[in-house]
Image (cartoon, rainbow, N blue to C red; front, side, top):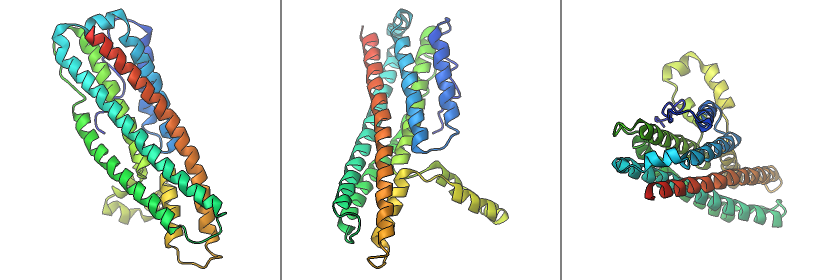
Length: 293
């Protein structure tokens, strides 16, 4: 998304320890954008977001901040900030639902394969159920990703009055909203089975491919494949690979291995997302209390 900032340059001008802390969190998140799009990387970004929102919540509760934001002339900006925080909560909630739906289907498939001891053919129906659920999740995510572009376009606003303190605070809140949406976008892309590495590879020009065929092949091999892609691929191999019963043992074992890794991945993502969701609610309550009072 195009609205990411290197760090917040619009924090309140009056010195306060929270100012430097928030800038540090912005810098950490900016640095993490250059890393991989693996589940572990996204979990790290979710933790960074939690720390950022903790600091933001403390900043909102400062008497000076509340006084600046409570001015009547700031009403339009206040409404925009509140709408933005609600939009971020909706995206986060949708990501939680997508994770939960995928997790439940994967666990059901894993349970069935355990009962059959992984050595029988005939998982087509169960795999088809999982695949159907994944298609529904992916469709919902793709729509959400399109909506995120519109939300990103609304994330920056022009200064509204001469109250520099209020301008700085509201601009910072919009930057926090923007970076939170970016991390959630990465998470949704991960859940859908996509990856930034794939999009980068697909973007190479024909000339580059012709001039550097070995380089392209090497980067294609090194392109990171996340846990969602691995499981989808393993299930595809199991259901469509036409082999004998004895030869089918390897794909089944591969699926069982991927399911175990997938379960650990989902659990880690769920914990990070749930913690972030709680902090988003806390920040929104602080904003509502500030603006209403």
